[in-house]
Image (cartoon, rainbow, N blue to C red):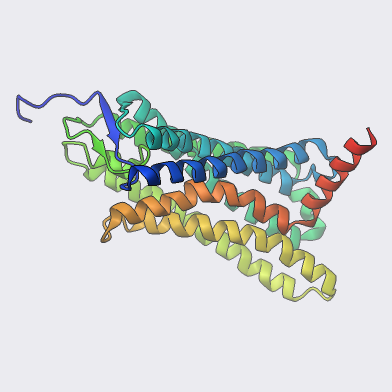
Length: 310
């Protein structure tokens, strides 16, 4: 490096390249969606905690997903709102790396939780008589801990590899938060190790889990088609279609973003993709599960009924 290069101590997030008036419109839209995300996932968490009929493995994993979604949105959206009001305000190097770390933790954990949820549905539909034996509480808690631990470990690996890199300018990140690929573009060093680890992580955390989910639902579809009762077939389709909607939105956008990072017009396109699986997905998940899940709607009615009686 040249002697006149200095170490970067903070970054400027360029955010959305739109007019100042559009900044206010986006601020209002994102603020409403963030509020809906917190309320929607908070209501699901409250229902699962308070309603004993929802104390099952399926809703245990759904509660973990709600926690991840709240954390996911809270990692990025406050920064987005701040930037929309004050685009020139920098974020410190430590703050940027911390944001990257937490975003990766929640992203990795959500990938693994979606696999656990598909496995739960596979056991429930394909092996119903052994469900309580296979999906006992000890197993469910262990699977959740494994998801969080693996997600945190992989995030730590990425962060350690970032911290070994020199950042000597420029300091402008072409994104609305400190996303991994966008931060790496500012490093003035060889990135082969970082890129290799990102590729391996994509295979292990995105492509691998997505294939496992597809395998689970291939078996589930076969089992559903064998159900004689029309009502039983409808119920099975209802619970599984909700999960498939979430899986399709999340894994689809994640694979496009990280498996093809050098595509044309990648800057603005990747911002839109990140909005989908780091912003809109957490807001849509409660809506998908509540509208297509009779037990969640039943739990809400029971809770409202108790409050009226009280």
